[in-house]
Structure formats: structure tokens, C-alpha cells
Image 1: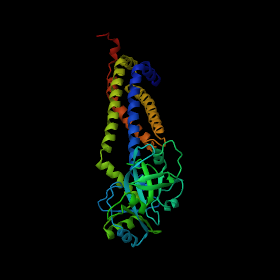
Image 2: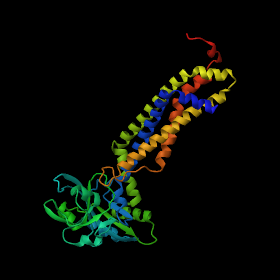
Image 3: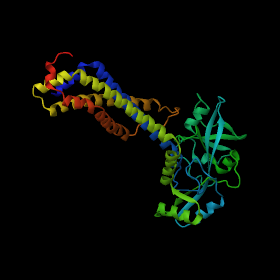
Length: 382
């Protein structure tokens, strides 16, 4: 009976393509938007994740996420360093600047000022140069993609100069830093230079980054720092989660992506439901003949499920392929969406959603097949 069902399905190619289009379009929208949302949330905490071997981030009590740091005092560093289980603690400066490249176009830049002595929280990967090069006069390190945006069509090599707030800065190293949430260029330098590029007031520390002693519990140490200093101390994982949670709760990102995904599901269900309903109507006499010949309702259900299941799998495969192709196309090093990718669980999530959506959208057609009167085959046109 499944062979008969498949022949019926492919016998009406127009409606077959209609159902296929609905499933494919919905699959692409759900997968692509879901992948973009995941990538955007990952990008929001990239700077925290790449900050060397930092165990704990200490910040002003009103700081809710990485990009909204309220400065604290330098003396707070000594408060943290003097606590038990704290192996080291260093100040860190974060600022946002606008830099201009060789083309004259302005780019937003995230400036990270590392402790002059320890250079703690530095990026792990260097394409050219090394962390020690930052100890040279006027030295800065720029991420590879940021360099390509500032000096397009030029070899990615150290030696270039920039002006940051009318002060000279020399590129001595190129990093392979992951993209930031709200900046095209990521610059690392010593804290003393960062303060000259982006002057601050008396409160000149954005964060205190710290490491714990061997064997100490990071969570307990963070809680101890918070209790003693009156500041907020979070583990790197907790700070990353807090940053992502801020964007989820306080921006329109979640609503925008959720709306697109829901619309994709609704449109896909509407196309599949209406088209399959027309398919069932056109083939109702065939189902009536089968019922007259003794085919049970269970077999009819199996036929309908086979028809819908096959077309759903084909549409799903095409949709996942198109979504994967999209992420492959936008993965170029200079792309605005670099670093975005399709996580392994996203296709599985889409499969579950589409299975439910297709099942719901075909229920009406299935009902008409089950209640069809075998005598329909003997009736002439009305």
C-alpha cells in the first residue's frame, strides 16, 4: 500500500512541489535563524571566554554584562589580592573607540588594557608577534580580521601605525581573537597606554581579573570576594552566562528571532496544510476505491503518513542543506557573520519542530481520508 501512496503523491507534481516548498522554507527559516541567534549569543561572551586563564571577574555591583562596565578604584585590586585563595589579581580596562583605516572609513574598536606587569587576560592565539611584544613603546595588538578591515588588500603583518585619540599606536602583534559583540576591531595593549588612548576619571579600572590558588574552589572564592569587598565577583562561566542573559532579557534580540522562527513555522504549516488538503480532495475518489476494496483505516493512515513523511523528509533535507550552505558562505574571515556556524543540535531541533508542524497541518486531510464514503466512487459529478 505504501507503493500506491507514493505513486499517488508523485502523480500530482504541482501539489507535491507546493508541499515541498512549504517544508523547505520553514526548515531554512528555523535552522538559519536559530543558528544566527546561537552565534550572536556566543559572540556576546567571546571576550570573556578568550581572556587567558582568568578564573574570576570582579566588577562594580551595578555591572550587568561585559559591555556595560562601571569603573571601580585601583585600590580595589589590593583588596582582592589580599584575600585567601586568590593567587593573583590584575586590573583590566575596557573602552570603545572609533579608529580609521587606510581607506579613511571609521571602524568601531574594542580596546582592552592589560595589566602592565602581568599582561593577564591576554588572548591565547597570536598570528604574528607575541604577548611580550606588547611591552614595547606605543605597542598594540590587533585581531587579524580587524587588521584586514583597517588595511584591506594589504599583507597582514605588524608594523602599521594608528592614531588613537591623537596618540600614536604601533601594531606589534596580530591576534586571532574571536569576534566581539559590538566592535569590528579588537585591540589589546598595556593598561597605561589604554588610559592614554581612552582617558578615564579617578575610577580607572573596568574589571579586576583574578586567579585562584591550586585546589581552591573558584565558586567559593568568588563568593568570598563579593562578601569582603562589596563588589561582585563571578566565575568566567557565570559572567558569560550573565552577559548572555542580559541580552536575552533586556534587548529585542530574542523577540525578533523568535518572531521570525514562529512565522516560518506558521507559513510552512499553512502551505503544507492547504496544499495537502487540496491533494486529498483531488484524490478522495482513490481513497474511496481503496476503502471499498477492503483497505482498513489503519492502512489508510499508514498511506497518508508515508506520503507526508516522505515529502517532509525531502523538504527537511533540502532546507538543512540550504541553511548549512548559508553558514558556509558567511564564514569568510572578513564577513560580518564570521564565527557563526550551525551547531550540531540545531538540525535535530528543527527536525522535531517540523515533525510536529507537519503532523498538525495534515490532521484535517487525514480526517477526510478516514471518513470518506466508499460509495463516492459510484457517484457521478454533482
